[in-house]
Length: 286
Image (cartoon, rainbow, N blue to C red):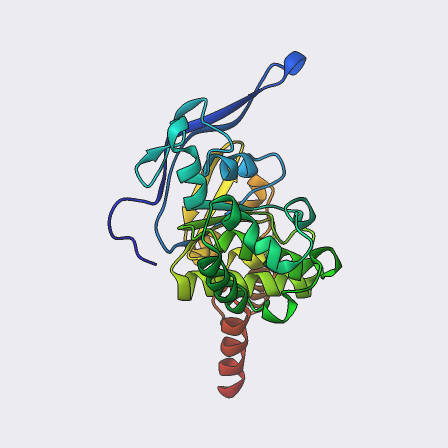
């Protein structure tokens, strides 16, 4: 993570209210102040209806704040002249990849945005080759996206966004429709983007086991930030997650259960490898 300089994305007391006819005004995000740094992996978790998907759409001007401001690399999302610059800088990957894929082959899908930008053919081929190799889709370039597995489809959607050379990718529950294998594929891709590409990734999820992989976890509740910290702080000894409709990760629950039974383990453990190592050390001392 590289936090030098101003934040890549900054919420400044930003809020968003839906106006839905007879239902009236429905506030979804309320006066949020939040920063996303360059190269940072941030997980955003919250129960259904907490406002986290609205928050995600505010990051690339799909939704413009009804109060306050959201600033991307110095550009306000309320500035209509800057919308396309913002959307190139902050790409979106949505929950259902079938709703995002529009082309007949993987290669054409990655080329779609580049063609719209008028990128020269030679340069386009170089970008496509690089991105497909980077995401591990080189062998699938001639395949039809709708015939791929869910995890592969989502990686195609990521590749298409990545070809636009964004500074940040926002993934709005991008693993919620995938099987465990597909979720692992997407999470490995996310780790690669943060580690090797120095891209910022904002990962909206309801899987706590995915959130523990992030640098930071932002817990969203009733349109506001309930807490913001490292996975260890949030899940280990942070707020009462039950109060905001969330569970701790399975590993943390297991560690706490073992502590309650008299084992000398850290109840704030969030990762399986850490728990396994701690249990092995206990056994070696007995």
